[in-house]
Length: 230
Image (tube, rainbow, N blue to C red; front, side, top):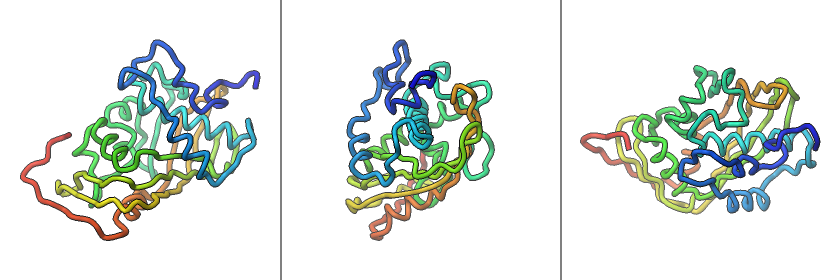
């Protein structure tokens, strides 16, 4: 639609950007994730409707946050005015997320995982190995710009074992059960006139994912002498 930025019209818009310092030297390929999304999503939004625009904006933001290594290349945010927070916690800058990674930015230390024991790359390898695709959708939008509030869903299948370090420095192993991981939450985002994200507040129970991973009881914890940042 004329006048709307491409990142709210095409879920993969930012992967086409040129001159970008990509984390792995090239744009990511979301083909498998988009297929899972199309086959197992719960909501069906009319093209260019508000829920559809919000969904595509967030998907492009996730691509940039995960794979664009320079904040200046993030087109989905209003960088000087951008902040991100989880469950009422302190606002984080884009630079903070670039340093720690998207998983570490949203998960607090717990009995299964601790972000302080895992680097950006290690955290992504840990979760992507366990769950190769992690689709995301907007379920419903409660209010429109400039303050957009919406309910979302994030889901996948636990295909491989989980191995990570917890808040006690223990090595945690959870045997894959081949079943679904399905979490929901809400978000409140302030956007500017270019529909760029300014203030993003996310609310959800991060333990839902770990409880679903460990629901079969196949969990072992091993004490280690010393845990270095991986």
